[in-house]
Structure formats: structure tokens, C-alpha cells
Amino acid sequence: MNEKKNKFSAKVVRDLIFSVGGLVAMNGVIQLLLYPQIKRTLGGEKFGDILSILAVVSVLATAIGTGANYARMVAKTKNRGGNGDFNVFLLLSFIPVAIISVISSVLILGEKGIVFNALLIALSFLSVLRYYGDVEYRLNVNFVLFFVYYLLISVGYVVGTFMIKGGVFGDRLTWVTAIILGELLAVGFVAVSGSIFKGREALKVSPEFGANMKTVMFLVATNFINALVLQADKLLLNVFVNGEAVTVFYIATLIGKVIAMLTTPLNGIIIGYLTRYKGKFTAKFFTVVTVASLAVSVIFTAGGVLVSHIFVKWMYPDVYSEAAVYFLVANAGQVLYFISGTMMVVVLRFVHERFQLIINMVYAALFAAIVIPLVWKFGIWGITWGLLAVNVLRFLLVAAVGYAHVDKNDGKNDGPDGIPEETTREIPEEEKREIPEKEKREIPEKVAQNTEDETRENAEKLEETAEKASEAEDSRNVKKEDLRRQSH
Image 1 (cartoon, helix red, strand yellow):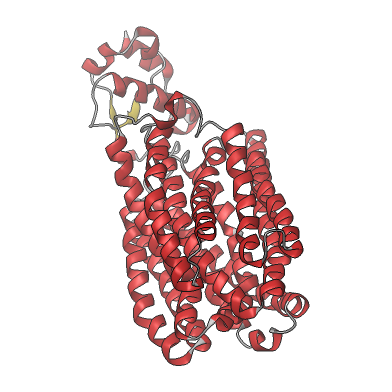
Image 2 (image 1 turned 180 degrees about the horizontal axis):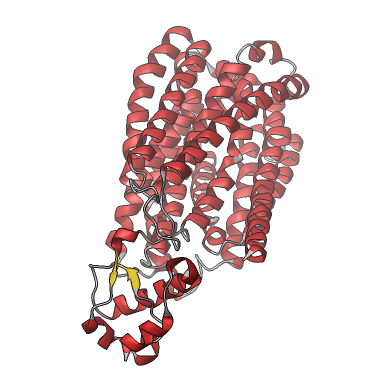
């Protein structure tokens, strides 16, 4: 038993290292090479505008790509449908992605050129596919290939950085081409190495299409709200202040976001293992999750402030003095947002997915009521304090939903094998007759009550319960010889 636990723990640690490593590589290239090169080439004001357009791309990719990604995981846990349902949905999403991309390009960048807008549409749709694509490795719990997936994105971005520096296609087109390269490498890799985009089933709609799309719509809606709020700082500052303010606030929150984004692969691991978890959602379990989340938030915030002073002074010396005053509050707000997201992943394993939509709708309402007026009135300081306030409220809201759904029994009345004592009973003779003779000799006196299914499925569950009960034979004082005599 200990050997199995050690192997499981080692696998979890290995998965975490590979998944975090991939994200660290990608974000490291973005923050150390790609974005600084764009800023040096185009200047602070234009860089702020580009960050704003990339915020729109991120909202589309997160809402559609991540929404479909999580829905595919849900479908697996419920043995519903295959890849075709989700691929058809992704193809249908191309039209709104294209329309929103072009409108954003015109409004934010003033770009009306056909070539640039075609490239922006390609970037947006490839980003949607890339955000969805890593579900291949989550489904199969293969975080080695997950690492390779994000490493290829990093390689594409490195090459793109040198393209920007060399002005390969001119300043106007090269930055978008550089980012496309990274997304294209990732999508190409999953298409070749995985199965989600392969075979005859790739575009075949399953009988469960309607049920799958219902889940997709829930998760797309909730991820849209989630992503819109997350990226709203760039869009609001661009509207109410200017592109330079976007740059300053982005740099002030940079390390906080990078540290917090490390929870993204952790969420993937949590989802992967929680789909196999059959235990209870107890108050004790959720209290450990909540306290650990708060402790991690404090550590990440302190680390974020310290590293921000070092990193920003090194990479963005021209805006260090402007950004430094926001480090503490801005980083705390960013970290709390992502940590509460990790808590939500745990909670959603045990409650209906509609609660994610409800939580994010409440969060969006709080954001609109608190943050928008503050940024309009106080600019960067307004959005800094406003984000901290709404993210504290989000954390409390997720915690409240979790505690409202914990198992009220909390394991207090469980027998030594984990089966609640009040739900055990003697096997009726008529049920015993339905069970094969060999199984009769192995079934203990008491089994978990199952009033929902009294047929063949019940026999299978009884056999599974018997295996568990046999391990606790001494503690439950089950006498096998007495049972054999009763069975005959």
C-alpha cells in the first residue's frame, strides 16, 4: 500500500514539474524576450495598444478554447460523446472570432488593412485552438507531452522575437506574425501527436451532442466573464486614460500575474486527478484547501513584490519609478484572483457547473459596480484598489459555495471501511439468488445500501463493496463460515 502511495505521489510531483515547467518556459520567453522587444521597437504608447488588442484575443481564446477544453474533461467523466462534438463547435466559433477581431483592430489600433486583419484573425483562431489543444494531454494525464506542447510555443516566440528585432515584415506586421508562429507550432504538434483532431471521428457529431453543447455553453459563458474581467484592466485604462497607462499597470502587475499563472497547470493536474476521485467532499478537506490557498496567496504576494523590484528595474528601467508604487496592492489583487480560481476548480468537482457561472456573474457585477467607477475617477490607483477589493470578495464567495456543499455526514458515522453504518443492511434472500454461486461465498454480511438499482448493476456494486469490506474483516468481526452456511 505504501509503495503504491509513494508511486502516486512521485507521479503527481513529476506531473507538476513538467506542467509548471512548460508554462514557466512560455511565460519566461514572453516576459523576458517578446514583450520587451515589442516595447523597444514600437514604444510605450503603441505597446499599450498592442497589449489591449492581445487582451481581446485572450478573451476569445479563453472563453471558447478553455471553455471547450473544460467541457471535454467533463464529457469524459460522464462518458459522453467524443472529439467530434467539440471540434464542430470550434469550427463554428471561427465566424464570431473573425468579426470581433476585425472590429477590435479598427477601434483600438485603427488598422483597416486587409493583410493585417487577416493575420489578426489567424492569430485569434489559432489561439482558440491552442487553448483547447492541451486537453489532449490532460485527458491522457501525459504531462511530458504537455511540457513539449508549451516548449514549442516558447520556441516559436523566441524565433518571433528575432523577427521583430530584424523587422522582417516591418514593425506593423512582424509582431502579430511572431506570435502566430508560436501558436501554429503548438496546434501542429497536437494535431500530429494527439488524437483530438485526427481520424474519422474528428468531425462526427455524437448522440450526446446536445448535452455536450449545454456544458460547453455554460463553461464558455463563465470563462468569457472570467477572461473579460481579467483583461478589463487593459481595456478600461486604454479607454479612460491612454496606452501609456496600460503599459505602466501591466508592468506593475507583471510578476504577480506570472506567479499566479503557475496555478493554471496546477488546475489541470487537479482536474485530471479529481475526475478519478471517489471520496467525499468534507468540511475538513475543504478547510485544508482554503487555509492552504490563503497561505500560498501571502507567500506569492510577498515573492511577487520582491521580484518585481528586481525584474522591472532590470527589464523596464524607464517605467520602474512609475510602476513601483503599485507593486504591493496590484500583485496581491492578481494573486488572489488566480488562487480563488484554483479553489473553484476543487469546488466544481463536487457541485453543479452552473455555480461557476453564477460565481462569475456575481463577480462581474461586483467588478462593474466597484472597479469601473474607480478607474474612471482615479485612473491607475482606482483599478489597483478596485481589483484587490473584488478579488477578496471572489475568494470569499467561492469559499461560501464550497462550505455550503460539504458532506454533512463528514465521515463521522462511517464504518472502518469508509461505508456509513446507517446505510448498511442485510442482503435479502431474493437478491442473493440473483448473484452467481461463486460470488455468494465471498460477500460479507453487510454491504452499502443502494436503493436506486436492484438489478444486475447492484450485484456489481455489491462485489466491489465486498472487496473493500474484506480488508476490514477483523474490525467488523465478519465470520466467513457463518456467511457460507447462510448462502447455502
